[in-house]
Amino acid sequence: MDSTHDDRSALKLLLERLRTRLDERGDAETSSWPSLAEPRTLASFRRAVRDAADACAPESPSQAALDRARSTAAELMVAERLLDAGCCIEREVATPTGKRVDFRARKGGATLCIHVKRAPQPTLRDALISIPSAWRAIARIKRPIMFALAIDRPLRGRALRDAVEEACAFAEQASIGDDLVLHAPDGRSAARLRALGPSHERTARLVADLSQSFDDHVPRFQATLRKAFAQFMPRSENLIVVCGTPGGYEPFVTALLGSSIERWDRRPRLGEAIAYGRGVDGFWAGSLRNQSRSAVYWTLAPHSEPLLFLRETRARTEPSRGIQLAREVFVGHGSDG
Image 1 (tube, rainbow, N blue to C red):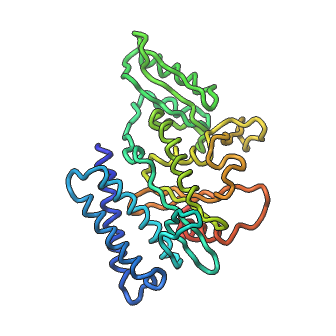
Image 2 (image 1 turned 90 degrees about the vertical axis):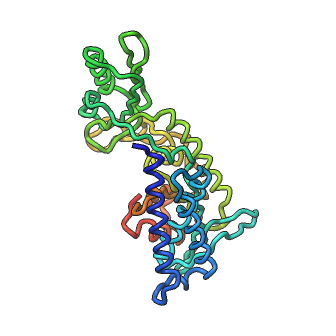
């Protein structure tokens, strides 16, 4: 299956849905949208979504056209969510430093500045990889750890059985971050197994290892987060929204929160032998960028739901009205984060 084509199909469906909603709500007498956004803002949304849909229409659209369409879809998904929640919105609001905030939303005395970013482009072509059934013996091991498997060349017969047995033995005792290289009879590398992080399942979770892609994507996501941070409105609650594909979720979380690590200074959860946490390499690590307290990852698909992340604070204080508004808009519709 061509994942690039699949991504474009989902994007076309999303743009069509957004266009239909704008046509329905932008001019309807019973709609609240015209009272929440300036007419020229709604008109600009309609023009943008039509242009984006037209750019995706050819059989082989250019990469630049697709990227523009994805950026348009990301902004309009956020705008739709804000308007449906009853927020008054302003678009492209200037900051004192000469930067721009994509949206400033107001409701009930609360204000939230929102920065919409498209996920780094390579994650928009997720690899569709299936793991051969023989290797799935690893997933039956009773350890709540996620393992990533990369297969360089297929093995058969005795060589495959020996490799799977060695991989299972490794998975029984591996720590987070450990990896194992498995060799073919001729001595060349045949597969690689990595212990990625904790799993919420009772048995091991086995996923395809896109390690080169994953390791490349994490710094790209951090660059995206830093770019959004540089555009923050001072003395305001700011929210970063990153929109991409399902395959971008894990590198986004790692970029935001840090790499998964084993924590020996914490008590494990009930029934577990090891406590897990996040390293100091995340965008939110320690007291870094403490003005950033909320972020969203959202899949560019017609019926997807945003996932809201709220930063933990040491002081047990009530969340700001801006944070409460972020929860209302991005969690109140049935999503969870």
